[in-house]
Length: 408
Image (tube, rainbow, N blue to C red; front, side):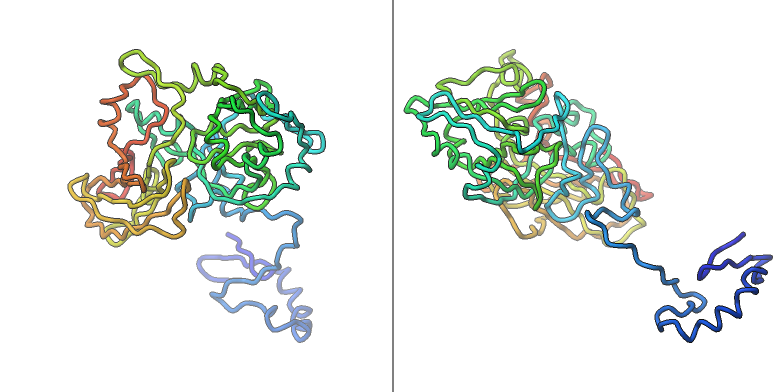
């Protein structure tokens, strides 16, 4: 067996140590050079961690190789169990690509606004960036996030079950500011937002929401949008299902009625047990999930652990989060970590002293409107199993006696 130390190598033989011939030949020269070395460059004493030369500066930072396992899944899901705080790194933000990802040169990209407006206009990226900007933190969640849990096939990890959601600081100009430039006609009721992807994904959005809090975003977490997130410009529709947050935005058409695109008459409707379908179910209701300890992880043994996770609501701020560590017999109030923002992730924490017995743990949240996160049974009783979009049921994890954590 050979191990390396200070640039040379030592041969181990039966538990003892013998310097190699090469090492012995170089020893005299090394001793002569010691007097010229700085103090922190001296050879390490036995048991000390060897010093290593630092890496050179890089034009664009990237993660330590020791964090290489923290990646999006093959389905583009965010690794929630490996994240801290409330901000999702841009490269780990979940992605759903219905028609692939266009690569757009911002110098050639334009946003057309027409329809029921006083002055149809075309905006370049430079035009948008000259307008007063805002930066806000908001979550983004796919309508189908954790829908398999409603189907009775719970995800095995937070990433697998809840990974189609992320939280970002978005920067851009208010849509209301852009619409002021064109002037809405009195009959304007809806706005059809269309992307420049191959399928021209388009959704109708009520004018009231357009004039409220929607952002025409070109920045994400302090830098330009990633191409997967709609570079060079997208809509950010706080609290509403992900597909309304149109990426690669290139047209806004103002209408009197919704456009009834295939996306809003088929793909993103909720088929009820009665056979009727709900349309325009935009808001993502209050929801939470424990990310540690959670499925795919293992506890080291009985003792004190921190239970943590995230909660969010499309209707505003999270007001409270409760934790059960005994299968739902008792619920304890968790600590909410600041900042607590509207339509954004809220990190919660609770200290748990595990006695080593098998149990189930879960979180449930309540938002500022008083809406409390329901159980799966309550949701299925109302919606059935025909459609699984907008599922926000309580997520349970099972802690086994050996410390393994699985879905429940």
